[in-house]
Length: 393
Image (cartoon, rainbow, N blue to C red; front, side, top):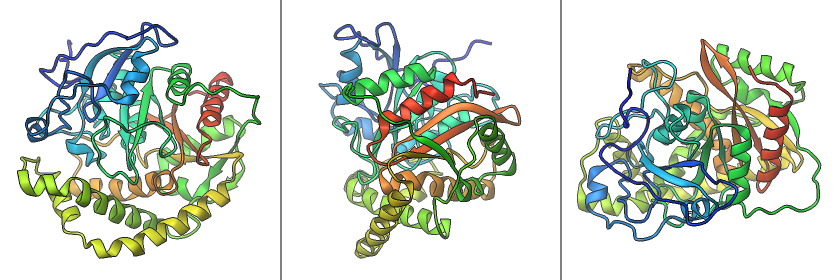
């Protein structure tokens, strides 16, 4: 059956092909770009028609797009995103939901749903996304592709629609680990330097406990095969507090960043998304100092526990891809656990990789590692090493 362009992740009706501006290490690779990221001459829609209608068409590429085009990547299209990035499921009320690459009754994960789907379907070799609370990591796990969320601030955000700037990052998806690594070398400036001691892979058992039983079993089986058995604790306390603090601080960022436009424009929004923005805009800004103090202390303690030379296995998502018609209770349960897991990297600004090395129920389970801030290149080197060992199911 022939799939439509939209069902494979691309914004319907939007032609956006841009040739590379120079040759380089990504020659010949097809690049898809999330519709929160500027491509010169194409509207940045943010997954919402009223955003596109009320903002000018950018006249320059986002910094990350320009960097990849300068080493040979060819832009082939803009990809669907959940409205203004405020979801982890992958649905869009206006532009459709990208089709899951393995089972059509499953969701692709969001909000970088289209970018993950485009790579998983083989329509793109690499794709740019954004990740605030898990918007690259969750769809990578759901769709079974390699991906990375970098340390906060490592990849420029110039030309990217702001969502919650205290957590926003530009991440990427790739068809394989070697390509994931190559993109990282470009976006991180290609810094080489002397050989570094490899990161020691460990496993965060308290984070693993948040996942469904089948996901836990898949990740434990993979870790045993890979010889990873050093136990660690990521949350070191109640995991709910991490998600609560993240939701509050993200919401306060949204209130400040997007609130003025929402109040003035009163945009159309899907019925699942509108209440989320309503809750964010209703938050009391006077609560920020309390939540920020909690974040600062929790992040400092996590980085100290993690240290500079370890990488901890954590679930990228607490379950396999959700059913398209999952009820509100199942979605709420997923959301609470996914936000808590995603908030580890979010609160502390950590890099995190997702590797398509495990499976449960015939669906992908992302093998994911966090490392200390700034250890992005070493995390990519760990991904290469794990891929080379054949620890892939």
